[in-house]
Each structure stands twice: as structure tokens, then as C-alpha cells.
Image 1 (tube, helix red, strand yellow):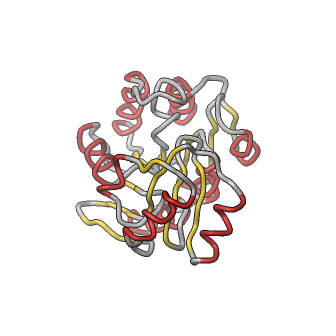
Image 2 (cartoon, helix red, strand yellow; image 1 turned 90 degrees about the horizontal axis):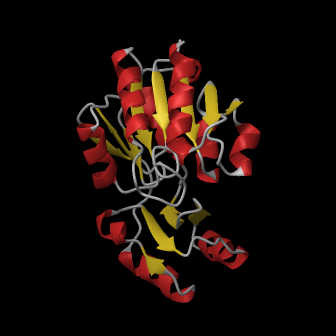
Length: 222
């Protein structure tokens, strides 16, 4: 029986990839899952304040994994999972590769966003030489302290919630969700997900983004 549902935000709970408009019917489906006894957690590269606010206002109880696994919130307590990055290193990365910083960087501590989202080999080497992690969600580049990646944050959340891998479901759209999928017993990629994610998903859904969330929750509750 699934007790925890992990869901990405951008491209998953939105109406489509490339838009920030949340799919209202997907949110209704999350509320249905909660009423049925499944805790819903938001797992995203977005900053902690954004996800923490959504978690409250959407009426969710499963917690938050923010900054691509670097911050975890559960039952009123926040935990830092990744190393803190200095503003100097963040500014240097943006300058060296001519990138624009995300407006959310003002509120970040460990995982910082940049656009354009194209990940290049020289960026990976630059990060590795400094003991850092860089990845692309398709929406933005993310530079973070180690361990970096959603997996570490999800493991911490499940430990806190006392939920096993077999009791966990996950849904997403991006290659950055691969690590999250490794921590869940049943996983679903929305129809417009990255090919890398579809390869590791238990289920490839017929519908895109928010509509796919509704499709997956119908499966879980049937």
C-alpha cells in the first residue's frame, strides 16, 4: 500500500512543461490522495520558501524536499542535507559561463539556479574541480554542494516519515527526478517527460504534466 507520494513541481504539477501555471485539476487529485490517507510531498529544485508556501496552502502533509534534495521539511522542522555554497562561488559560475541567475537565488543556501539550462562538459569539469555538483532540470542549471541531487533529500524525508521504499510512489518529468525514482517502489513519468526518466519509470503515463498526475493518482486509488 502506498503511504507517501512524492511529486515534482515544474512540468509535473503545471499544465505543461515550460509554463509555471499550476494545473488546478492536478491539485484536486493531490487533495483526493491526502483524503485517502496518502501523504503528498513536494520534491523540486525550487527554493525552500516557494515549496514551503505551496505545501501549506495546498493542504499537503508529506513534507518538502527543496533545492534538489538539499533541504527537507517535515512536521514543522527543517533539515539541511547539502553543503552551503558561498555567494562568491555562485557569482563566479555565472560569470565564467555567462549565465543569468534565478530570482530564487536570493533565498537559496545550497543549490543555485541559472539559465539558459544547457549543461556543457566544461561546466561539469568546473564543478567537479571544486567538489561541487552541476545538473540541468531542463528549466535551469543547478549548482550545488555535495551530496546534491534529489535522492539524498528523499532518503532523509522517508526516514523522518518512517515510510519504506515499497510504500512510496513518485511522479516527475525531468532527468533530475531519476534519483527520486530510485527511492520509490512505484514510479510514473508523465507522457512529456525526458526520455532518461521514462527509461527508469515503472509506468509511462498516457497524459502529460498535470493531467498525468491525475492519471497516476487514479491508479493508486483504484
